[in-house]
Each structure stands twice: as structure tokens, then as C-alpha cells.
Length: 371
Image 1 (cartoon, helix red, strand yellow):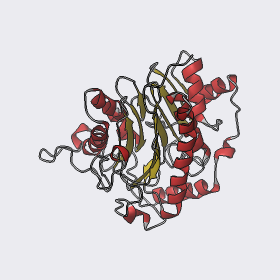
Image 2 (cartoon, rainbow, N blue to C red):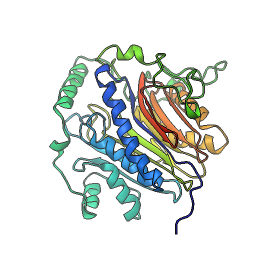
Image 3 (cartoon, rainbow, N blue to C red):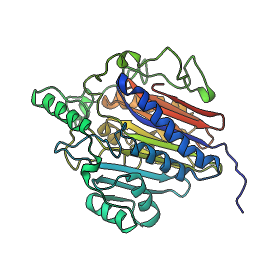
């Protein structure tokens, strides 16, 4: 006998914070909607938040539109390396994998780590062997590589050979390992305005349920960036995917998956699969998934930073905006965040030109390309 639901289920997904080109906008919005429909179907039938976020992210990994699973960005040697993390906020259990090359759905491998291992994190061949021992098929890395990404890698390497600056890892900082170069917080503006496109979910003129901006609004803060099919430099490699959920029994869960950064050095691991950085869930605080430049996010442990503020009493919509402001003001970083509290309040924010997002509640589904 199952207990009666005590909460309205909520699912929020993102498809990455970056400059989504005009010819990819429809695919991004369609992709996040497909993930919402799959994940929310589980919640509507009384399923767990953990099952819902795993299912939603699996859909995004299978969609070559996104930098997760098949179609991910390539390493400098032309391979796909994948990272993923899954966290259960009720049991405080987590599972993560990184640098896997032979798994089609790393989020499913992360679920196996969470459920079947006393450990929390596996990397490389060890992660693949663990997943295979529990029934996941191993594939050829070439199955994950698309011709589109080979072309994109060649373009990135040409820019690198031409000596063009790459600010992917440090934003505008000359040396992101020197604290003296950190951005100073404006004493008058407090957290300031962090970058080209940043509207808090509680301040939009066009409000749907829980203050989400109307995706049909013509007042689109990212529209100028979508006028060209070519994203501006340094905003073309941040298409991580993620999902957070609250189920009918009040449990939170979070999942994040990525193919990493375009032209990354093999073996590099970003924030997405690190607990408290790109993903975190705790029923006593909040669930969060982040996207963007991983190195600044890691150094600030930004996911935990945001959930701690919700636990201390901040509304998620405020904590989300403050997290992105902190990311920019402290380390010049760019990215996006989805954040969900145990009471069902939530926040979305980004300081990149766009971020594909979707929201599912008992009232229906909503998607957008900026907030």
C-alpha cells in the first residue's frame, strides 16, 4: 500500500546555457519538451523524482541536438568523453561517472553507481567496466561522434592555431588561479548584473505559474544573439543538460550530464558530474543543476552554494539569480542554473545569451530559450 501524495510534482529541465544559433532554436525547444513529457509522465503516475530526472536526462542524451551522449563535443583528439551525476535528495545517495567513452547513456551508469555500489564515483575504463558488469552494453566511441562535431572541432582548432583567445575556462580573467585577479563585487550594486542576458524569474513582466517568463513573449533578451546562425566566440561549447524534480512524496532529485567542452584536453572533467558543483540534491535544502564554464563553477562549488541559501531561507528564484551573479562577479564565469526547493518554489537564471529550459507541473508544460 502506497501513501497518498503530499506534494504537487514538479520537473524542470535545461538543455544548456550558451548562444543557441537560430537554426538550432526549434530543436532545442522541442528537445526539452520531449524530456519533460517523458519525465513528468513518471511523476504523474506517482513515480519517484529520481526515476523522473534519470528518464528526462536519458531523452536529452539520446537527442543529438545537445552536448550529452551522442552528438557531444569532441576532445582535442577527436573523441567523445562523457560525464554524469545523479543525486537522491531523500536518501542523500549519489552516483557519478566521468571520462566514459563507450556508454551511450552515462546517466544510467550513474544510477547504477548510486544503487549498486558502496562508492560514489567511477571514471574512465573502471566506470565502463562497472556499468558493463551490471548489464549496460559497451559501444564503439565512433557511434557517439557526429560529422557536425568533427567540423566544429576543426574550426575550434583553427582558431586556437591562429592565436585567438580562449576564455572558456576563466571568463575574462588573465589568470584564474590568482585570487588577486578575481572580480570585485560592486559595493553599491551588491551582486551586479552578470553579463549579456540575465533576467530573474521573479522580475519578468510576463508571468506564468511561479513567475516563469512567458516563452511566447517578444521581449526576448537573447534574440539579438539568435539573429546569426553562428554563435559568438566563447559561447559555443556549453550545452550540458540537466533535470531536477520534486515528487508527490516530497523527495527531491537532480541529474546532470555532459560531453564537456569543445576541444578539451582528454581526461578533463568539468563541474557537471561533481557533487555540489554542477549537481546536488537534499530534501532539507534544494535540488540544482548547472550548466556553463565548468572551471569557475567548480571553484565556487556553486550548486551547494545555491542550495545552502535556500536552506537558509532564500527563495529559490532569488538564490538562482544570486548564484549566477556570484559566478560572474567572483570569477568572471558564465552559465545557467535551475533550482527547486522542497516546497515547490523554483528559480531559473543564466548570464549567457540563451538557455533552453522546460517546466512541468500539474498545470501543464512550458518551455523557453531564455529567462
